[in-house]
Length: 113
Ligand code: SF4
Image (cartoon, rainbow, N blue to C red; front, side, top):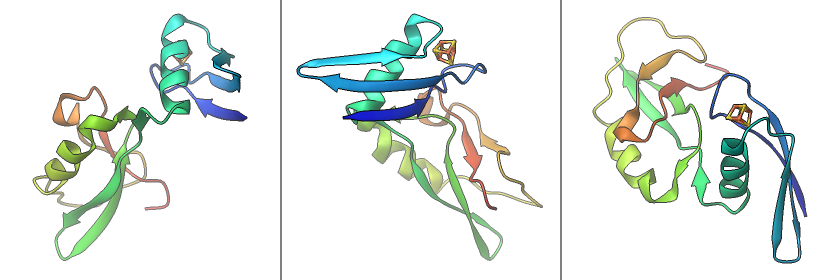
């Protein structure tokens, strides 16, 4: 089984190829050790990108975390979305909250908004 993953740990956004061979998880395409950890965790489903909605007046805006967060933080991030208020126009990729729930990920407007 193989999966292509974009490492979001830094601005280089390396394209990782992660594959499982027996018990071993092999990551390639990373330029540094952080990519090994990030690729492995995302491949195994230990980290996920959180998607949701926040209010902007009477409308709801689709949002997501800027990078995958630990699965154990998903509920906390989901709760935090209820406290995020947005005024004015938004565009895809706009940061609405930095370091949401201390995960290291920002809350951004999803693509297609
Ligand atoms: S593998 Fe390293 S250099 Fe590449 S995006 Fe991830 S953190 Fe950045």
